[in-house]
Length: 252
Image (cartoon, rainbow, N blue to C red; front, side, top):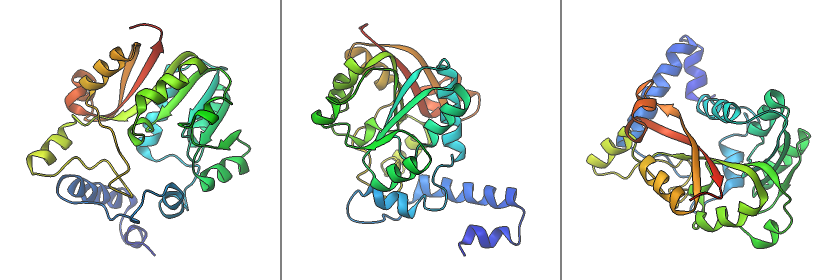
């Protein structure tokens, strides 16, 4: 039995969740996660981190997918590139009746998606031979994906001809106040879970707006989905920890 489960046998769930949040805050400011292995292993991630909760949305993932739902009309075609366990696709099907498709590099995650009846295939979307097999979609979702690839500019450019309306891209905001405080204490922002090499690229909100314009995209909307309540909408570069961007191609 894990410590969290053990505590819930003696304390109210709300109290345990509060203690867990305090611990996570302490780690994000002063400490480090314990790496699972010496290499970035997404199959290992799904085995270790989500084995008992695959297909379910955590609190911050639910905030993210709700923001995606608000940005998307019903009954459109969607490709979720890097769909993981398919939880976002399933939510979109249930709430927007979308024509949902996905692709991921994890065999374990793809097997789970297919077992749920989702149209998901195993592939690395950064590879040219995979891009050649794609059709066109109204929306392409890149949710917490582009920070994991070494050349996100090339990925967006390669997918540009496959999107009709817009990309929906979410990234962590490295300008978030908690990351700034951690830097003041001499530690780089802690944005990884299982391996320190998970994230290869980093943006603040201001950086991302410049970057999108440089690539020739119009930012239709920037939606902070996590961070300091209220303030994240007033000053996202400082108070939003995660932001969703709706990028329309063709304008620069």
